[in-house]
Amino acid sequence: MKKVYARPAYCMNCHLCEVNCIVAHSRSRDLFRAYKRENLRGTARVIVEERLPLSVAVQCRHCDDPRCVAGCISGAMVKDPETGIVYCQEDKCVGCWTCVAGCPYGAIRPGEKNGRPVPLKCDLCREADEPACVAGCPNRALVFEERRAGA
Amino acid sequence: MNYVIIGNSVAAVNAVAGIREYDREGSITIVSAENYYAYGRPLISYWLEKRVQDQDMPYRPQEFYEKNCVRVLLGRRAVKLDPEVRQVHLDNGEKLPYDRLLLATGGRPFVPPIAGLTAANYFTFINYDDVRRLEAFAIPGREAVILGAGPTGLKAMESLVQRGVKVTLVELADRIWAPALDPEAGALIAGFLQDNGISLYLNDTLTGIRQEDDGHLHMELKSGRELKADILVIAIGVRPNVELLEGLPGVTINRGVVVGPDLSTGLPGVYAAGDVVDGNPPLLPHAAIQGKIAGRNMAGAQETYLPLPPYNALGFLGLHIISMGNSVATGEGYELLTEVDPATLVYRKLVLKDNRLSGALLINKIDRAGIYRQLLEEGIEVTSFKDALLRPDFGLLSLPETIWKQKLAE
Image (cartoon, rainbow over all chains, first blue to last red; front, top):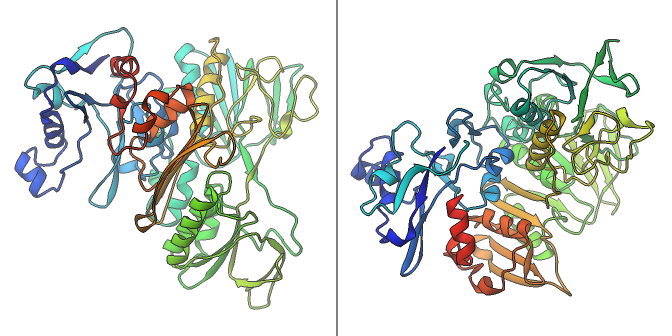
């Protein structure tokens, strides 16, 4: 399947992937409104880690046998059998955070939206052609491509 | 190929998925003692406090069974297994032939002998019917005693408190959730519970109960203390449902059924997964992973289940705990890394043995917990990045370059 791959040598630590991720997962799809009205600051589903001068964006690897799916107590977290995308049906999530304990990459963070729990994890912007983090990366430090066979 | 699965919870549903990865054609029959399609068992406490409604209980959508061509027999019990002719006998007299059988019967609550205890004066807290029955009793102003302050007792406590019931926890050990919490963490959480109006009696247990004429329960504890309440919930653990295999030659039963690395039981074509398996911690991720692998192997794969250390996430009343591995270890042979802030109820402890993670306990600061779990399960030596383990910015980049590069390429 196509996944987002990080190329740390090209990452300039601008954190635009985080910003674009937040906007893409906002209701308004607008940066100003996402931050100032929807209060979504800090809810990125991609994490830019820094060991300066090194930086790299970390996000869900959409595992073949995802621990987050295996551990989900409500059946909210699923792997789409067609696309291979691992995503959370957020209205089913109860916020137990077994997924947080399960993810080998630490790529799921406990979050909250309107008083409801939201696991902050990458869904590859599954309704768009290309994930927002990749589309907005100014130096192609994130690429969206198929690197191996299988979903 | 003809598959029969006894049980219809997480292990069973994942076994269906595992079978279908290899065999689209074979017939699958699920025998479900409960009258419900699979639901997330831990959701019962959320249901009781109305955070989850009936329609959100199913673990998989209804189409799951149709899509995977699964016949589900609801409200049916398997009463006998005849491995000679490969048949399961049901409680209605029906006999189901099988080529491959999965025992995913789970466990049932352990209820100790207590003077005066009758089926009518206590609740267990493990299935949907338990909370449906409890719902009518759990009304504001009532009082409940919960025997057992482990994960089940604590979730029962949370849901009853949210319904306005006053809760007293009685725990035989010297602290809450003793297999996962060390004394310091136990004390921290005991304080949190008391601040939330919950009474807690440790080193104590129930020795007698009687129901008075007005319906109130009168309980006596080992310490001599007496408690009055309207509701008693018993939550001191589960016992594997192994009856179907008892006495059959070729099967070993300890606490649960002993399985080989491929999750087979020793009887031809018979596998087991989930809480019924001996030595398996009764935890949902473990049941799901075992179910998937058992299903694949039943359909011809040759996959090995490597026993996973326990890991668990538990939240109640806004507090969140993640524990993994040997999270209570102290003393000789262990190195402990800790961060404690009682004011914010933050407690983070990593247990190292021979410079490898052996356990972790994280309270109220659980970000990136899965990286610890992975280090623990893979037995990775942490010497070179030990100092970074509890730093606020700990992440993949804290690990050796060869490791994080490989992880990001997965």
